[in-house]
Image 1 (tube, rainbow, N blue to C red):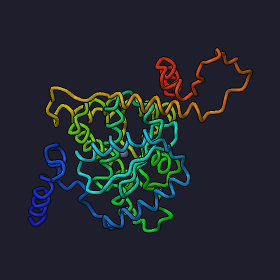
Image 2: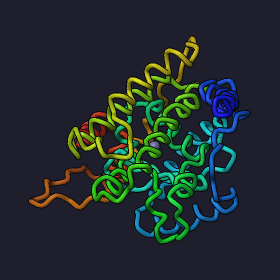
Image 3: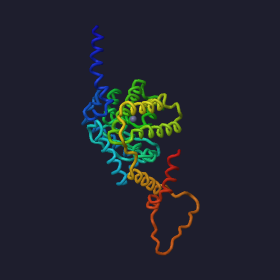
Image 4: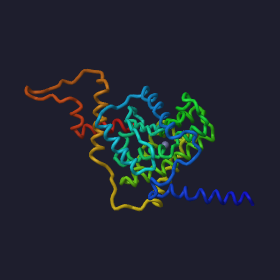
Length: 321
Ligand SMILES: [Zn+2]
């Protein structure tokens, strides 16, 4: 009898929190980070700062002011419509995969491949909203707590990315089954919360379906269809269905949504131009450069950003892997 009563109390306590997580109107007033966590917020932020320094030592940061201002503006808009209680730092690192890394303490790193894979700002915002949900729910330190990780040296296991943690945990069999289940639960939760942040920020929620399809198909091409069986992420088909169902059942349709912006197109073109500048010239004889006296010789960066047809051809070459 006591067990039944205890169960009833647990259900009574648990239900409102679960329902609140599905109600976009309660964003900001609900606690989505509830759970056992050995880390205070201050400790989490100090840990995040330390890990971000390590990550930046091993990554190439995109330092372009225009790109950084854009992702920061986009991220802050999403944060304003999220449950996150800590400030967010968003940076871009070079990498061809459509991936992002979220560290404890609100440090998010977008790979350039993620920005080039997205076809609209809503798609990029969807991927970012998913990462912001990991921050809001403090998944990194909750997972570290569960695995009883206390040494900084072993913390990189909690790096959260679309593929990163899969490679670490699934490829070499390091991650115990219990942690895998927890990680999958966190991914499902980040999809649920991120979708609401995307919607409340005014974006087309279908952007999440579109970017997930692209990321999952990239992942399948790279790792094989069945790699997800042991991965830290839930099965991709199930995730897509869950997002579609959540759009239908949790979000009231709005008369209009933001799909994309000219700033997004500018950032994509700028990244292509930066990449174009960085890559070495192809081997072989160079074609002659022809100009008449009095012509201004534009540099290649300007040529690419101003020539839409050329930029889109290059983009296609980069995104079709
Ligand atoms: Zn995730």
